[in-house]
Every structure is written in C-alpha cells, then in structure tokens.
Amino acid sequence: PARRVPAALQSGPSGLPERQHWIWVFGEIKGLRWVLEHQVMAFADHTAPRVRTLKAGDLACLYVSRGAFHNPTRDLTYLAGLVEVNDAPHTSTPVEIAGRSYSLLVKFRPIRLLPERQGPLVLHLVRELEWVKRPEVWGHYFRVSPIRVSAKDYGKLEAAVLGWPEASQ
Image (cartoon, rainbow, N blue to C red; front, side):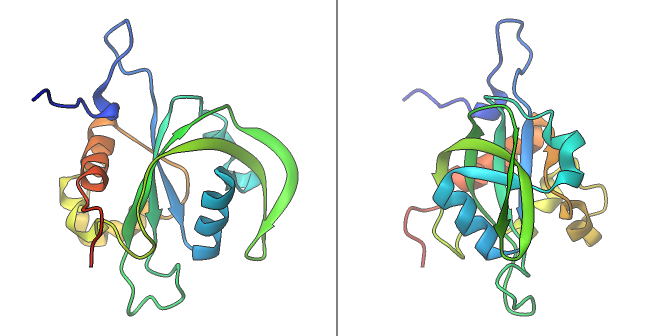
C-alpha cells in the first residue's frame, strides 16, 4: 500500500514547504471548547505580530495544558487535534471566552480532533522535538500561543495525533 506523506512534509512547486506550522496552546478548557464549537481560533491582541503571519493552508496542532481543567496536580498535558487554517486572521468585535477578551480570529477546518482528555501526552514527545532545547524544563517552551515550529517538529506531533487510536480508554 502507498504511504501517506504527512501534510507537514508536503511541498509546493518550488520544492520548498509553503505552509507554516504552529502549536496553539489552550490553558483553559472552556477556550478549547469554544474554538472547536465555532471552528475559529481566537487570539489576544498582544499576539498580533505572530498571528498576522498565519495564512490559509497553515497547519496547527492543538495543545492542552495540564492546568486547563483547573487540577494541574492530577491532569497531564496532551495534544487534542490538528487543524488547517482556512483564511488570513481578521480583527473582530472582541469575543469573551472564560472571562478573557479576544479580537483576532482565524477560521480553520479540523483535520483530526481527539476526545476531551485523550490524546498523545506531550511529556513523551518533547525529547524528539528539535525546538525544545532543554527537555527537563519543556513546559516553558509552550507558554504563549501561537508557537511557530519547524515542519519536522510539526511532523512528529502530527504523527502522534494521527497515530492515536480511535477509541482510547
């Protein structure tokens, strides 16, 4: 059977990757739920310099922090899915999610979304990521969303999400 080429490694006519690759961090589960329901990512104004470089076709991996469920001593950090950006970011009337205001919005289409509180644990992936220079303090690298990563690092995250079983226990 033919092997699927991960989206992160696909290239354009020039042979160079045309897409940018991102991690979108969720420190609040209400935020992830809103984003998935509306299929729109919401960013705070202070992230504008990074957000404005997003474009249609870019790929993002959804990262849920261990504090998202308000029980960081029990919960773990995991990947919740993969999405593709549909359109350039736009400024909107601010939306309020979990008591915070967001006015930069980006539409996306889901590639694969995993059930809540399931998905690959980030702890098991950080040593494979070139972007994480000090794995012993890896959480520091995932603080501010959006985070641009290399196609190679994104490919490792993508493979973990795509390889996650359909129904995990």
